[in-house]
Amino acid sequence: MQQIRDNFERMAKLSDEEWDAFSSKLIHEEFPKKAAILKKDHLENYLSFVEKGLVRYYIPREDSDLTFAFVFDGEFASGYDSFITRLPAHYNIEALADTVLWRISYNDLQDIYAETKIGNTIGRLASESLFLKKTKRELSLLNDSAEQRYRNLFIEQPQLIQKIPQKYLASYIGITPQALSRIRKRIY
Image (cartoon, rainbow, N blue to C red):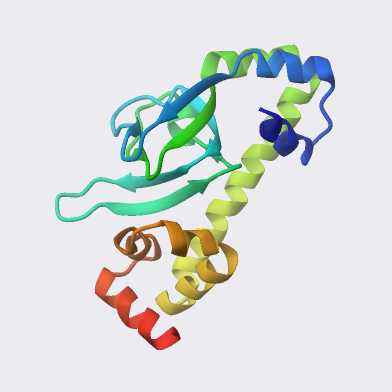
């Protein structure tokens, strides 16, 4: 749980009382590889912190899934649009490796926002961070070639290249696995 506090404190200093109020609400859960964390058409009830593992977000399709995000150790995972709107998710979230999560429910998080001074600040800063990450990905999909998106992944997130099957990487950068193979041959 110290990893979560350290993550928060990069945004804003927490008093011990504020941390105690927050950490008392956390639930520890473990998911084996390939386990569903959130299923399409279900409501997201948790904001989760990945202590250890790897998480994939995808839209299930008949011919092949469309992967649109990965989350690693030390990052937050949630069907956040479903979490904040209280509407069902339009995608699945699954563990790509054995994954350990620390989770807080929607209702408990609302209590933290109401009970602590720092709660709203952390919520705003975390939301801003998620927004910037999403915007960067969208701009890359609109402006960069597939090869440049792959190179950016290799530079910015080398753990993606090492831990994720090529079919998911290809889907994430918006190309077929065969096109990814051709790009990799040109680069290496």
